[in-house]
Length: 133
Image 1 (cartoon, one colour):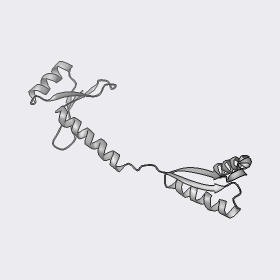
Image 2: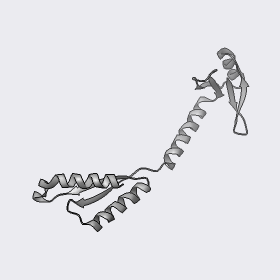
Image 3: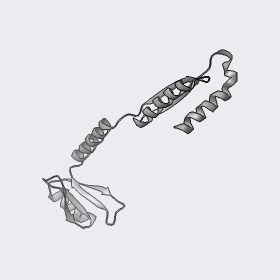
Image 4: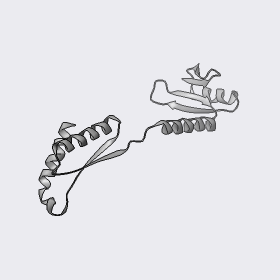
C-alpha cells in the first residue's frame, strides 16, 4: 500500500503496488524516496516523500512531544521514628498531595545517634504510611 502527502495535510493513498512500481512512481514524482512506514500490516505501508524532510519533521515532532512532557519529580517527606500523631498526619497529607500531582514520593525516617537501635520502629512507620496511602 503506497501513500503520498497531499496539500491538505492528510496522506493520499495511491493504491497497492509492487516495490518496483512504487520506486518507479517515486522517481516519476520528482526523484523522491520510498519509506517503509509499517512493515507489519498486510500489505506493508510505504510513503513517497523526500527522506531528509520526513526525518526533519519526525525529529521536530519528537522534540515538541518531549518539550510538552512533564518531568516527574521526586518529592521527599522526612520524619523521625518517634513522630507525633498530628505531625504524622501532616506528613501523610503532604505525601498524598505529591502523589496526586503526579510526582514520586520518597519517605525518609531519620535517626540521631543511638536511636538507630530502634530501626524496627522506623520500618513499621514506613509500612504504616505505605498502607495508608
